[in-house]
Image 1 (cartoon, rainbow, N blue to C red):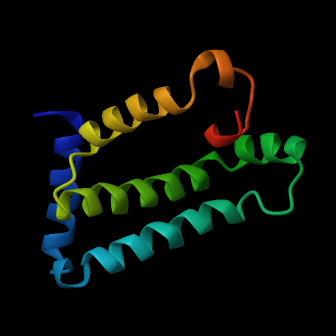
Image 2 (cartoon, one colour; image 1 turned 180 degrees about the vertical axis):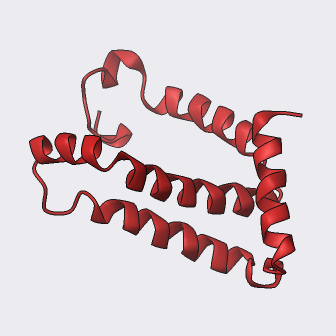
Length: 115
């Protein structure tokens, strides 16, 4: 069993012990992912690039917790909807490689349709 499968099993066990599956439909999980992502963004709001670098070092544990919250909801969402997260990432990376060929996109932040 992969590390991700083990983590998903732990997430589901945590959820099921609390009888929360009834609340974890696709809509609620998608909303929760966004809410947690905005909580991560709050750490960076109004800070300069230099301030962010120092802030991250000084608040690493809080940032790790926000990242974990996002990942927990994302992994459960993927599991609940039958999405194989590893396969999805692999397919998306292949698709992005075609949209963003190295020769055109290296060192460039433009969207693929503007390259």
